[in-house]
Image (cartoon, rainbow, N blue to C red; front, side):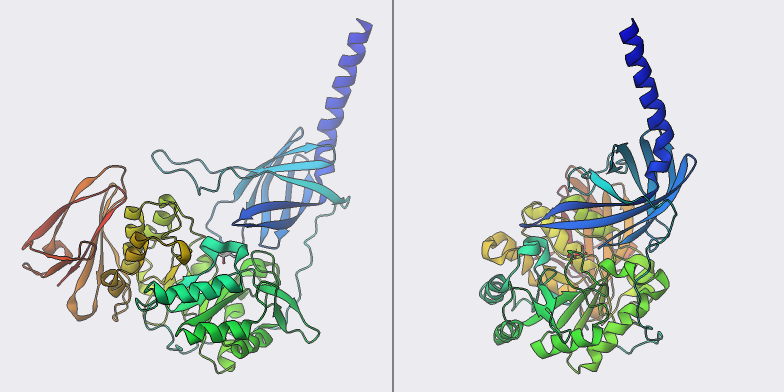
Length: 519
Ligand code: GLA
């Protein structure tokens, strides 16, 4: 009995001490690392978390090489904590919720996956969010912001005139979706060869774009050097140009790129000159860690700074803004010199992700036009996670949206069916239509959506999309689309003309599309 009482007493004391200690022991600065598998090369993301505790509640801040978030609504219950982390660049979004457990010197945080609405496909498809283990680096209980990184004054915002480099949406290939961090000089050369031999180039795909992870360190003069995967960038550009193709590259306005490599922060003009000297034709400029330097009110200026630096080189370089659609980029992207700007988070090779990125674009059409395009992210066609039917939908939807077409597959493993999808010239002609008007949804009946895109010369592209799990019959009356009866109709996947004087009906397979050109 005495032994039992002693043990029970010890347990009670321990619980009391834990409950009493938890809030104040949370206060201070914590750090941790998380490794994500991005293709063949894992990427490690280090983050710092500062918590300021007041009774059972706390606030704080977290900063990583990727972003900076405010901690809101923190509550403590014993050794369990709960809070939200809000991105100041996304005012409308609800904060990412976390739960955490304090155990000795470690704080384990688990992001709470948002509940899946009934009937919807499961989340973003990257598996369960991994927990993050943090360790305390300072006992500092005073809440303080890590000092913002200094930056020289940004150029005052003034509308830039169009550069004329993207009168139709850019077409090409980009290394990220398939190669991630493993891309190297050999892959880019062989992709250039294959762009020619597979007919991709002649179908219009001319840019060969190296995404993140090419960057090395800076030399004594501050010039950016490629890392060992890219021994000679100028020679690579010469090779790509010798195939009548163009070479693209990637950087960030922040100190680090999203994969943690060297960004262009404090070196914008110098980097632009380096790219021009190498013979670069396209720059994707990815926000990533720029949130550590700039506030939401400075994003447009940070982009314009690089646009001006590129223009000052005298070399024509397409400028691609990558900031995930934050801060209504369509309303300022063109004026800061952007030829295209991302309007979504990263795509993945699954129907739910592709459909979320594509179908959500309805309503953005007024922002797009010749030389400045909405970009719902690069293509996943041929990467293996969708059916050929779904890949046809992917290309059709991007064509209706006047979206940039940047293939993201391994061309050395491309099947004839995938090549036929990517190089369907009738669908590409819709994407590249000279009028440059982005399409929009005209009707929605549950999973069945009809979209239209006005084309040059009075023609119209019409997409009958079935987002549902079973084949369905779909109909469209020409008068409802403002088209006169007895139009000329072409089915762009079947490659045949159709007769349908007043209306048209078709069986559309699950996740499939019927894409028509009607005049
Ligand atoms: C971000 C971009 C991607 C890709 C990666 C590279 O996630 O949105 O398209 O460029 O960075 O790190």
